Image (cartoon, rainbow, N blue to C red; front, side, top):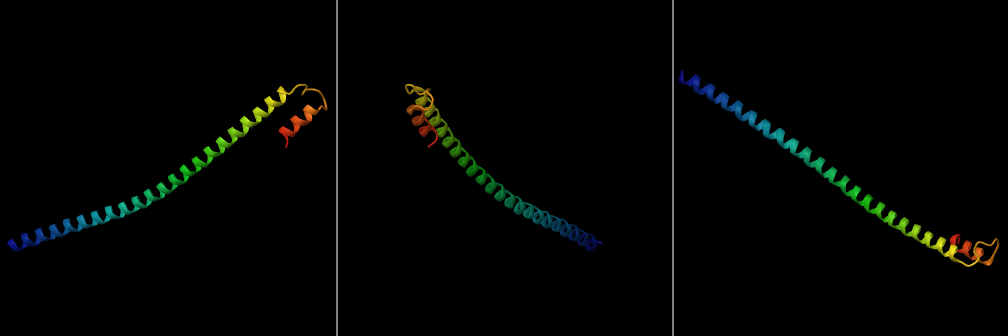
Length: 99
């Protein structure tokens, strides 16, 4: 009788131990999957940060070009007699705007 109880207890303990090992193994695989996913997302984030930096640089360049264009237009408008057709001032202005 005692042998049956001891055998049943050992069997239950073995099943519980097997279930625990299976669960730990499953969690380990999930952990590895999550780590790989995290690495991929970090790489994507790094690429996005680089793209943001490139876009900011382009916007700064375009802003500088726009300001230079505004200055050229202001300079042309400030030329004396610049509105006369085919004048030297217009030719100089056109050379500034369209090099």
